[in-house]
Image 1 (cartoon, rainbow, N blue to C red):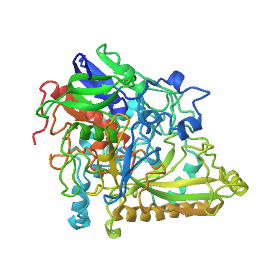
Image 2 (cartoon, rainbow, N blue to C red):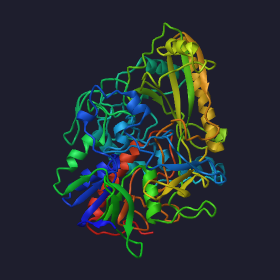
Image 3 (cartoon, rainbow, N blue to C red):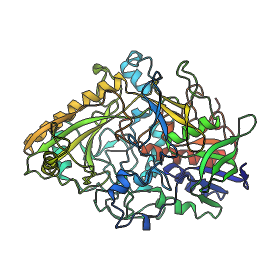
Amino acid sequence: MATRLRPVDIVIVGMGWTGAILAKELAETGLKIVALERGGPRQTDPDFQEPHKDDELRYAIRTELMQDVQRETLTFRNGAGETALPMRRLGSFLPGEGVGGAGVHWNGVTWRWLPWDHQARTRTVERYGRRIIPPEMNLQDWPVSYAELEPYYDKFEYMCGVSGKAGNIAGHLQPGGNPFEGARRRDYPNPPLPQSHAGALFDAASRALGYHPFPAPAANASRAYVNPDGVQLGACHLCGFCERFGCEADAKASPHFLLLPLARRNRDFELRTHARVLKVDLDAARRRATGVTYLDVRGRAFEQPAELVILAAYALNNVHLMLLSGIGRPYDPRTRTGVVGRNYAYQIGGGATVFFDENTWIHPYMGAGGLGVAIDDLSADNFDHGRFGFIGGASVSCMSSSGRPIQARPVPNGTPSWGSAWKAAVKRHYNHTLGIGLQGSVNAYDRNYLDLDPTYRDAFGRPLLRMTFDFHDNEKRMANHIADECVRIGEAMRGLGNVLQVQRGAPPARYSIVPYQSTHNTGGAVMGTNPQTSAVNRYLQSWDVPNVFVTGACAFPQNAGRNPTGPVGALAYWAAEAIKTRYLRRPGPLVRA
């Protein structure tokens, strides 16, 4: 029997980027707010200080800052005809756990998605016609345009202190920036990070091929910076320990120090850590949330009544909670009806590795999570891909993000996997190798979805989330085409350094959940204009239970060829403003179906 607590105005589930943004913005209302985080508290000091801060075994291999799959995991299969099995170790993606969520251990790459990404279906049909869209592909527009979201992209970038170079200010192209980006009102708050030698080689080689390289946008501050909220960020040390690690200098933007202290200025805001939400409680008609039920660190059950519930957990966990709570109709792949679990998507990778002689020094250990040079010529609809038979594209980049000793072991094909020859190859190539990577978009399909597993349960007796996902021909064609372009860029480096070999990385034929690829899971609770094909409206409000809002990348109708944190943050600010200025004044549906 759960202990019933005193009612509050708002309960927020999760304290990552979206939860912290909503907490900070809504705390300004003075309402009683409780935030529930399943993990523990985080503080820059002492949690991310030397000597333990750069412990690669602890954080990168044993994933201390991430979801504990011994207690809560998911099951996976490539197709509905297979038996799904539990993911026993984190692999393909790394959801965070604890205050700050994945915003503590991310790299900091902070893209805005392109205008095309917000209107993928409309613009595809306008350029290529309907016949290019496969019948099994659920290509959908966002219900929010890039122009509508631009002020919120701007707000997120200035809060995070993003380092970069604008390419399009108010419709005017800017030298040195990304000429393909949507128009922005002003430049980034900080100049780009210093260019690495690998980045300089990529810049020159891609430029020689007619591409348009620019510094990758990074929430790694290139200089000391005070954001509009008065919060200080330190300058990046280029230590190479960003992804999977916290930052000792507060140079990498993170919710735990940028947002949570501001939320706590409201005396009626309370954060409860080690509070695992089991479900959202609904009334008898299942049309209104009455609060949430959660377990504390001692396993005691509590019912927290609330007038408004905001699901701000990781994308997969939001969908899991909706399915467990009965919010929205679960997706059925046989009939292609239902919305919760629909349109799950991921990303596809590939690229090339360039091996140099011993006179070309790359120094991979000097880097930052978002330090690199990118091209957008092959992203979205920036090139004519209709003649190649696919929809979508990929960002291509050369990143100097890590040369950590355990995980950075670039060796050519044919090298023994162990022994003295392997050791010699690692020593020989470590300082003389760079990677050119593609991050490819993945569209949504009727056979890729999330639902509840009928067999396996978590440590709390709940059905596990089941993931059914595989790559489709459209994405394979795209990734193979762009991998060839990565090889061309690598070959163009022969005039810039003594290149020994350019090795093509083959994009995967089937998706595997075992090796790490990206923590960029999207869909499952997508936003839209039609309740038959979306779980939430344009303000991230549930169509079925209007006093529930669902934030994060689970709202994206499909996945783009770029990191999702920028639009995740922008949408959180967008939803926060709608809640403050519209919902709280008159609770109820903000959009009529």
